[in-house]
Length: 264
Length: 317
Image (cartoon, rainbow over all chains, first blue to last red):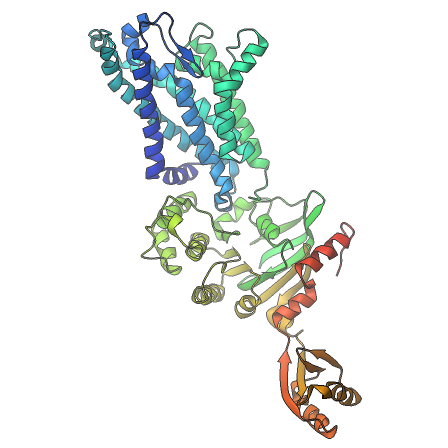
């Protein structure tokens, strides 16, 4: 598996891919903080598909420093899902999988290597998102007239580590969902369409159709996980459900990868 | 030891039997040519040998290890299956480095295979800028990475210019002479004839021929094509030669006599005796292509019709 991971990391180190991925999460961090703080002071904290902003009281505390990362977890999730799906499906669509399996017939090791490499890349992307967020949040907050003088004193490594851990865990599950969709569909376009469509449209429709709280649906669960727990799910519940989604997804991916003939 | 042994190996995709009870024994060392028309099962056979596709029934061994456990021989086998596929945004060198890492090979091996296939100087360019021929060379370089005992190449000269084809042919011959086994599938008969020591011909996934190239070439026939000075004498010439007990047909604007090359002078005399002056007398030998077509059928359309008319699972030898 280590050899497969090292091989995958070489393929991931494409300047355009790295710059695209990290640039996108940085751009999202800037946009979300700008919008989030500029809308502070309204009657209701704004929400939308994949975005849940905290209230003004929370933004005024040091939690406002990392609120951007947790508030738009689904947006970061979509980026992660898309890249995991793209990097998995293109192995099949380009035929690269033939070379890989001929060199390493243990398909489980190949897939495990890919998952580990993408997990490392997601960790880097989460770190960049958090770093940009921490850099831009005070500027955006002060621009919106929010006093950030207490943030510096109240800032702790634990707060940053928790924010990073929650965002990373949520992104990881989104990534696994992208990988599973790509393996099942062998098309990055389809996998990304379904993933994005779920977050932006389908989950909301399902929740409305069921006419009751649906915190267990993937989007809601992973939003709760990124926020470190919320009113619907506490952190333990969100983590448990996220783990279940990831476990089932990875199990499915391994079975499909192991059983499927490579005729691409 | 045999390089590849298959026993009643079959693989079906739905109702289509791509490989049908194929039993083969390919000797180790030398270049083995795998011939067959489109859809004959060549690629499916190669994919089964590499562990990409599982057989429906039967068994096989590669370098003495069963194909159900491809990990046992993967380190000793290099392969190029269909068109070479790489990450376009990465250089040739980085693509090969990625495969070298997967095979736990040192980075120095990458430089070696780049030199073998003649890509030095272009190896740091993104693969997306490569021509098909250069990608093909890169694919062969990837197959050579593990310094394989068995090299499996599916249409390796696709997209190469004539000079590149000659180069790859020399490389294959050289690899075959060095004790490796090179299994190469191709549609180019001249290619196979020039490079291969052993030939396998399959059709509808069934084995039609497996043996030394010389044995297949021994099936070629010799003809003597003769043309009279005046076309009006065609029938008279044919009659005269038939009377002399030579089988005669009309082909390529001439009277075609099935005869050995040593009969040419006697044919000329027989024509003269009938009062016919020849404007052409030419000894013609079947090409490997003709032998192949005789074995497999003629055109794709005829093959498709033959497949459609064949009851499922019936062996047609």
